[in-house]
Length: 542
Picture (cartoon, rainbow, N blue to C red):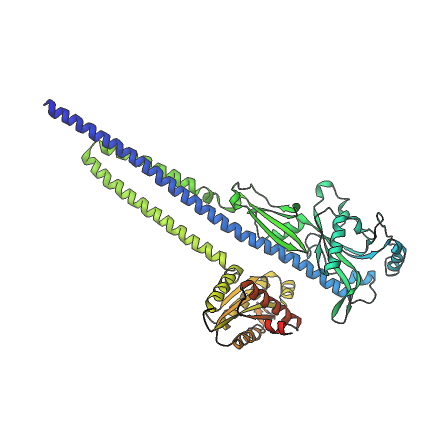
């Protein structure tokens, strides 16, 4: 009896030890699985947030670049008009700038016409421009300098100080931009500084600003004469106003954005509490007016929903809860073999359901990753490939066609008259034109060709496996002909045309060379009168 009791005691102890080990094993397994799932979900959240930030960053950089280009085009067109005027007067300048305002040029304070004069020319310059419609003009040269830059005419967009007669050369930042624009013959932007016209504002309302500068040359026929310099057009742009309006329809409070030049902040806008994860911060560079700007984006907690940000914690909490429940269940089952078997069956079923749910969650996450990947490589407006995917396809074509007898071509397409559609009928009409253009390109091109939207009204096409290089010209002819057809938007019809540049693949060129050649050929087509095509080889031969 004692032996049986002793054996039973040992057996109970053994079963107790086995039960305890089982409980510990279940606890450790549950905690491990819960932690692993939580980490996986948290990483997925971070990847998703990173992809969102990449998309925001690309959109914001594109928006800033597009707005700078639009301001540059406006000032350049005005400089062209002034250069073609035989005798510029105050009334002529007012008429030329009457269509400009703070709504069209967000953040701009005024457009000024500025002339250069040495110290001994100040009196003669003042007399000359008084005769041309500024009887009260009084030039105020600053400290002795080799050359002054006086504001002669001004069209102001607000109630800030009148700058006529002020010597801009006394501001080092402005003087630097004036010199760069004159030497480079194109738009130059100053380093950030505080505009002199804002000196009368309360200190809290003064903003860091930049000066857009375009040189004015006399026009001879259809071209400028760089050797006949007449002066500059300048436009002060307040940084915060410029950036805030640029981002109004893009960031939607999801990030805090700052724009800087050589470490000096031009503008900083955005609301919301910043997310602390440094991996989500984005720093991009862009070139504007012969200067390099740095764009910094810091995401706010509005980037992801409250539920998404806490998904990892929810998974961990649910996992731990399930684990504790399994531990308690296992402990109860250890006391009774029969009940334990039934409970084990139910626990097994619960585990299987939990695994199925986790598999379902993982499948949903994989599907979401596929959607995000598609968004990362396609233009959201037209559904076409974006710049990144297009470069990848061209790179693949360079590698594969090197082993074949066939060739391929890159076509760069720019819509003529698209800006007029946006200005006259609004951006919704412009978006419709872009979507219709994409649809027409899909219709007339082969299924294997790659069509991409580079941004704005620029498109690119990769035409592969050409038996004859002449086929690329036939494709360009079809594009030019098809895009000449009017587009119906509601009860109106608009018409845009296309200028096309062609670059044929040849030995020794890379992706960047092909795209640049096609882009240069496209600009040559525009110079030839638009609604036509030009092959890059014609540029080389010409």
